[in-house]
Image 1 (cartoon, rainbow, N blue to C red):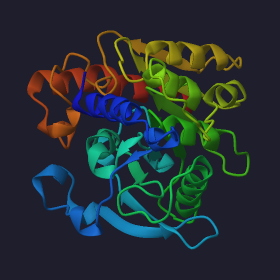
Image 2: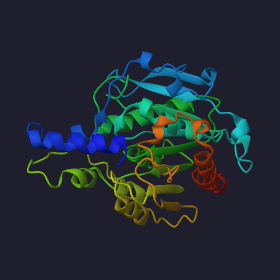
Image 3: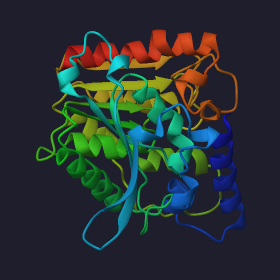
Image 4: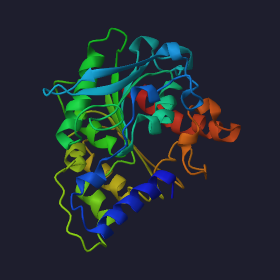
Length: 314
């Protein structure tokens, strides 16, 4: 079990033992506050990408005056797969998982950057340096604000929505918004809905939990009318593989470009490099830092699958 996985399960069980908190949304949204100063792109944890290609700013979201923290990284076209057209200027809009904040997911941004894509990552309201309170509705407003910002830029081109774990809910929601079209959706380790995810971790407790969030990814996968790439680890102990199989069953919309990969030996956060046995890939802030054998695995599998999918979609 990865460090993040352990912390999530430990916190969930600890809260249930105390019996003083019955709101399961507080378990679902395991945010970690941060200051803008914490995002220092000269620190070793955030190296690997030249600072001049990184933009960090607060973006208005929703109609209540809240602002979310956004990071935009412009592409290095030299890394782009030869089958993809540079003029497409592919931009990945990445929605991260339930735990922590963007600092926890920098290496995932770096995976997409390493493929030659623009990348926008953001913290949901209540996460990191983003203002406001986290709710399901606010998450959808936040990803919509991030999308609208991208559409106003001239250097963005084709937008692909990608989400890890809970970020799959924001991604699949966006994929169903006809007024905010994306070229494709990609989810990794996404759950089928919030209730199933909570039940996986709290079904043995004596506490009666209330959950306001639905995050009905099954319904949204079923109603997708655009290409969908799904990845899930076969030994994921945070979002068990049945979630991925149920999402894939729901996503059979007749689009032959859809792809699902259940990666043997991968846990919740090691799908990109399933043979990695450390606590979390996050200790490497950029693929360039991976040991040679792990970087080779990333290049040959995870990176190849995404590029194969996008070359067919685009």
